[in-house]
Length: 144
Length: 341
Image 1 (cartoon, chains in turn orange, green):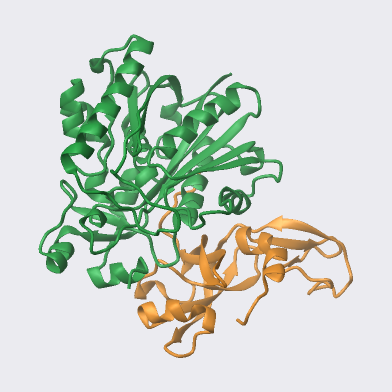
Image 2: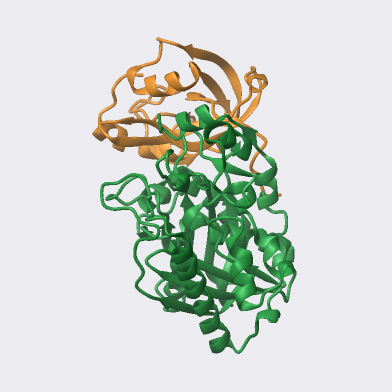
């Protein structure tokens, strides 16, 4: 991660706050984040917004240890000495990179079920950047 | 079709700090009747807690966020002194851009203010569905005993047209000018008090008693008519004092008590208390909710529980579920995640 300007962050709020992907009208592939050219059919297609469920599994993860966090996450690293970042494979099949939060050590494993949760990601120039992290599934009951 | 509460939900962060940690650090825990309190995680604030409670409430009400016409956020601890956060919540929930929003701040009675105004919003025909969410984690100087009871939590209610799980029968209010109790000046991070306990106590008791009397007069009810009563929970002792003064029994107000496990959750406390009794309430029950905001004002709201509530039991995580899901932290970690060291 590196510095993301406010205008760039703002343009991508639907994906950052509510996991809105863009579905290619040509081949049906969900592009996340949005792109000009579809990642699958490589066409300059039309896209329609598609809200992703936010449920998935840890595909892989790593732990960002002392000294290796990007500057905007240094406060967070100082708190516990390290924090986990995972590649999450969503129900819809695509993979995204995000932090894992509200976890116990034993929750950090490949295939563990996780769900998206709205959290503060970091603060820069006094502006709070909200977005999504993932946490182990155990909390919110979903309706039948 | 009638207008009322269509659903509700809460959120209580998983971290807890208990009395013993404070005693180790300060020699005492200056929070009567509180055993432990909820603490927001490093990546949580009143906005993120509000989003979680709101999602639960929308699920419980079976109302999609795209149907919302109003979103009211209530808190004394909005991360911004100026800049809407109801807009952040609206976007995170997926509400339409035409949604009307407002942030209710600077008082621990902001939750009931927003609830009552959301009813007016729907009743006046401005829209069909309103979401109100009270979410709070008040801050005080860790060197001040005032900091000890401060906890965290959120409660959200969907108010609108449909088959309500509960309807509002009436409300009463009392406002007087009072000074020097709980306050926070512009630009300050921490709440303060001039620390005159007998005076503060008297102002709270009189204001709340008076708003309850106003409600009883306008609805023709008497204290014994209510199955559940939610009284201001700044600590665990105050509710019994107020109850004694008005004539409520322990069986009426004890079921709403959350302060012993959550702490003082500011503007969210009265509505988390309401959510807890609604979790347990049966059709035909009557609930009285009161709030208090320093400065000073108090709302008293009378609520009738409807048949529909039985259909929605267990649909989303209850107050009890959240109270049971916890992880204890020590005092140093507490100061760190509250960014006080």
